[in-house]
Image 1 (cartoon, rainbow, N blue to C red):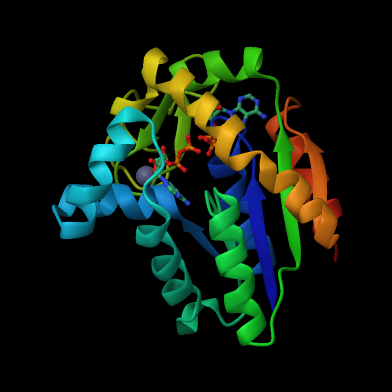
Image 2: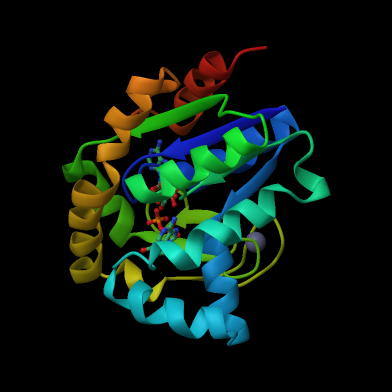
Length: 215
Ligand code: ADP
Ligand code: ADP
Ligand code: ZN
């Protein structure tokens, strides 16, 4: 059972790395951002509440997040393990999740902290495009899909997220610094943190993460 957390600021490359990691280790990729966006699209009560916060670049309240993830990792398809992308994002979420794991006699295998300087992150975020169906990230300049506007993997529509405009992105960097970056110390203390230089090529970052996760 491998339970892995991908940590890092918006644009660090969590979504980009997640698919390959999940495939290699036969674990399930769980992106809370993707789950919320799916709920927004479906117009569920959760989606309606979450959208208010997402549009402003703020975090969705903890009480809407914790149970959702804890229920999800309990499902059969997570038996072999899971890769959390975008969760936890606050110390409250991390503590809540640790208590949940402990209750089940489990603990996290590894927290992969992908570090990238903000100067590099902004152009990544402004140029990011994502697939509306499978969530795969692209970049207009550096990683465009083969056919403009169409996902290479699933044929879905490649679009720009409303919260990837400069103003909201800058807000999300601040939210990351204030509310999420304390998790680096939190996980360092529990001895599960591994740090990765996310400013390297996608393949190099992938290899470094695999070296950290082992086998
Ligand atoms: P996150 O999920 O951490 O917010 P993404 O994986 O969506 O980040 O990546 C953000 C943007 O940066 C995307 O446009 C992606 O194509 C690009 N990107 C990801 N990793 C790299 C990298 N190592 N080098 C250059 N660009 C990258
Ligand atoms: P990014 O790719 O930039 O890291 P995500 O797709 O992970 O962004 O998240 C998009 C938005 O969804 C966040 O700005 C936040 O509003 C909400 N969100 C996702 N995960 C969480 C979480 N664990 N806690 C609170 N809000 C979350
Ligand atoms: Zn797709």
